[in-house]
Length: 391
Image (tube, rainbow, N blue to C red; front, side, top):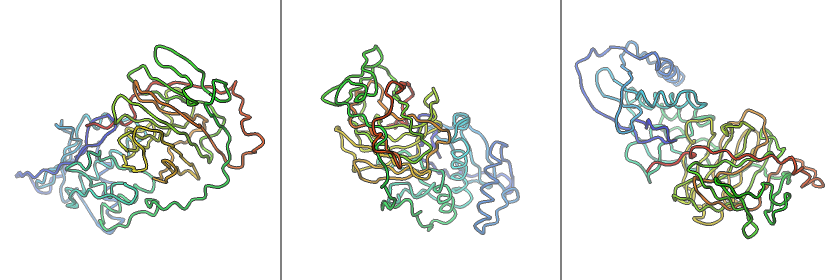
């Protein structure tokens, strides 16, 4: 079972035993699910398992499930799986639609066809070990898995063979070369001068921007999160290193704040984000997706004080650091050229920034600070909270 909520979370799976007197080989699968059932059989065949569910029987149908369930497996003969109608509708039209629906269907078929039970252990980097995670919650953590890129192949392998070894990139041993990056843009926030500040000092009904003890202070006055973006002339499709120190005073302890980077899409949707909360939780994702990729517990996060967040993009991979400690890697979802870098402020939160820096490969050190701040275009985009955790 998975959650049907659209508030960026997945909730526990539920396994239900029930019985009926249906024909054991009855096959009735809604057309919406047929593609994913066929994929499941194809993935099984790749791994030496010849399934023919049309012959052996399967019922998969829409239902209006209760208690935030997205799917429910009934151990009947044949296996009967219900998929929540609202969840299916809510996941449509997103960059993540196909992956999230496949994850849901494969999970339920894992229960019903493969006999898999819930497994709630984690890998070295904190990723859930299996797409079969679920049941009783662990540390109140949502069941989001980063089901994409190299992890998708791993999770499918593990689904069919529980002893599948963890991918090398889930190790917390960092082996990438970080040399060769030099500052392209640097804002110190030491004064209200444009070359120090970047963003204009402002005081409006919706927000205020000021200098507070050599840090930028942003105070939100609305009930939505803000994405505060600036055009830096650094292409987000290139290799770069982006770092900034942030301290946040949120309304709710679990509210997220962090950094964003992406294209100039006015909706603020075509951006990757890297956020944390004062509960020592970390999230990463892309605004075009239905949910954040996963939630991690990160001991390097300092509660209620300043944290330095760094992301290095190299060969399409993003490497994440908290207070100079390497914590995770994941593929970037950006495929459109752009030059927007910025930060996230939670609804009605107060956030302080220090030392905004973007580095690129092979930057001419004599031209550091040569960005024309008259062309330093900025945008403030109110958005729904990024992956706020449901209690």
